[in-house]
Every structure is written in structure tokens, then in C-alpha cells.
Image: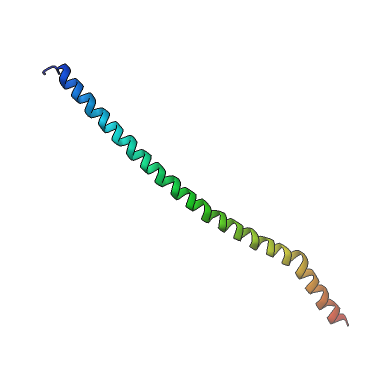
Length: 80
């Protein structure tokens, strides 16, 4: 097995450095894309959560106020 010379080692290290820099740049681009996607997804999830809370609030209103009032009116009508 032959030993590498200083020039060959330098060339190998430069090549390795270039590959690492390419990986870092690619990682940075992917990170930016991921942040954009997460921001968009969070906005959609937030809208769905708001819709869900409005539906739950409406059901609470109906069950606590509207249904008892309706039953009271029907009961008074049937007893009259």
C-alpha cells in the first residue's frame, strides 16, 4: 500500500471540505423550505382549531340555553 504524499492529502482534504460545504448549503436550503411549510401548516391548523372551538361553543349554547328553554315552552304548551 503506497503512502499518500502531502499534496495528495491536501487535495483530499480540499475535496472533503467542498463536499461538506455543499452539504451545509443544501441543508440550509432544505431548512428554509421546511420553515415555510411549517408556517403554512400551522396557519391552517390554527384555522381548523378556531372552527372547532366555534362549533363547541355553539353546542354548549344549544345544550345549556336553547334546549331547556325549548323544553319549557313545549311543557307549558302541553300543560295548558
